[in-house]
Image (cartoon, rainbow, N blue to C red; front, top):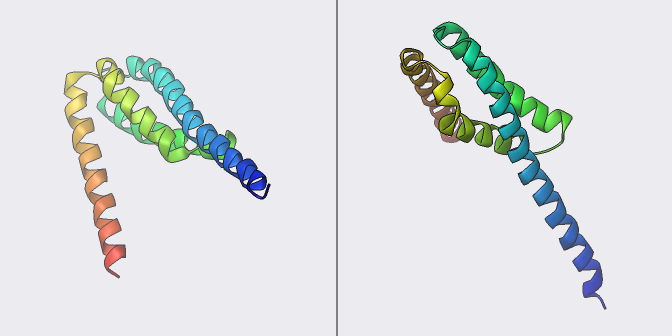
Length: 120
């Protein structure tokens, strides 16, 4: 009967993994749906859209991790997937080009930082 105590631990690990994963997905999708309302109001305003996309990304992470105690990175990924699939229709094509350039620069800087620190 020594395996019974391990079954409880494994079940706890499974429950926590499901909670973190699906909770993060739910928060990301909910924020994605709310963000479409914001982006619909700033349809042709490039600076507002870029600023809001950055602020909302951090807000999704913070709310998921600090408030709901679910996975922040998974919430941000779900938010990004939702915005790619649905949210882009709420952003003007003219603004979309500037937004894509902005996030390309952010990705380049983040990759540079990761590789510099991994090389140290």
